[in-house]
Image 1: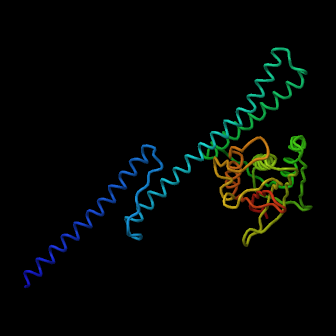
Image 2: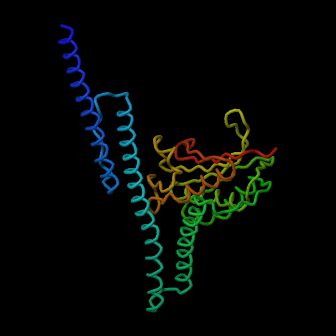
Image 3: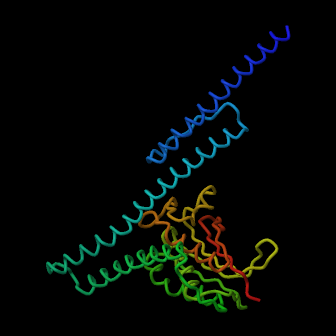
Length: 300
């Protein structure tokens, strides 16, 4: 009886080990096949979830599927970005070509007006190219900051007054709200102006009637920080998308203007803010619309 029991135990153990081995090797083979498909560009490939939900194989499968989902989302985002950039490039190029052809044919009603339109559209192209180059340099850390004490009030007023004519031409009212006391940060004046300008241009693309830029000292957790905020009265940003609105290539926000943005301007805002030890968040503006807020360390 001892020999019979021992033999039966050995047989049962062999069967269990064989079944376990087949289960493991089967899951590994499925994972290998899925990763090979993903490597070939089939980002929709997924590994079937094993029966066990809390072991090493289940965690491996979850990791592979999560990686594939993130890659698939990144591809969709890149495609949306390329479409947006193509739109932003095509619109001014079409205008430049049309006015240049009118000048060449002598059919332009007013050469001065045609020249002004060509210059304005060329400026739009130049800003887009500069934003793309700046974003590439920021990601590669191939840029320098010239840090010195800067009053954010001067930044807000300078950027606001510089863009006021464009905003008013678009039928938008601009309000600038700054405190009586200085709000000083340790930053690069030119880069801070770029941050404010990008935020105002973004707000101008989406606003219905008004844009507001403000500066104040605020609390971020237990610390006092300098706050530069730009708000508009447009359609706003859906709550699930707010944490992604400054991501590189993000272009999901609807626009009331000339089409969706490319995501370059706000990505540059985030990169520059973080380079100066700051942060940027998107919230809902009072009364509706979007409010983008940059927090920077307050220089004491």
